[in-house]
Length: 115
Ligand code: SF4
Image (cartoon, rainbow, N blue to C red):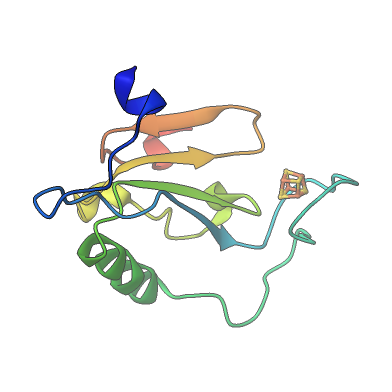
């Protein structure tokens, strides 16, 4: 509590983690919410990242010390590769899905087995 009332500057020995990242991984979505923030549609959009490109970005985020990665969209479960953060063993991760639930894991897979 004292730290909140009288915050001290970070000393040289403290090394805070990077920021939490929320990543809109795919634009495709199987819903058509009027309030949609990502202008999604139930179609493939050009120039989305390949699986390997996604993993390259994840590796960059790891180097940047991102502690938590939240995969969103669109509907991230519609990616054909079902991106698996567990294979990178990088982050505490979660996924926001239009099933109105949040699937959380500690670096475990969010995959087809969960259907
Ligand atoms: S579920 Fe999300 S991404 Fe899909 S249409 Fe609704 S707001 Fe957009």
